[in-house]
Length: 102
Image 1 (cartoon, one colour):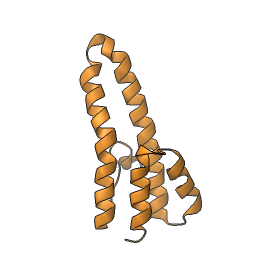
Image 2 (cartoon, helix red, strand yellow; image 1 turned 60 degrees about the horizontal axis):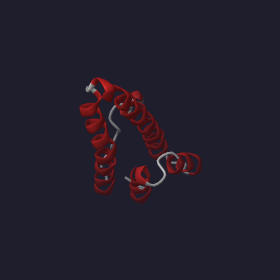
Image 3 (tube, helix red, strand yellow; image 1 turned 180 degrees about the vertical axis):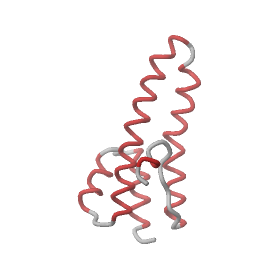
């Protein structure tokens, strides 16, 4: 379980550069696990952005409010779980997009 610092940086980047840091790490680092997590992080941010946008449009129908709350919490909490797993040296896959990389 090498590169704990890079994994923490990758997961924490969701709050300051959610697309730039994973993209740079994907290009610079030769570790396959970091590359896989970088792709998952970018795809997770894209999927969550789309889901939050759809939720905002569905607010008109009142269905979007719970969805917006759930997806907003997921966007904040999932990277924290990734940071904790990276510090502990455990493997982590992002929900929704993690199953695309088996």
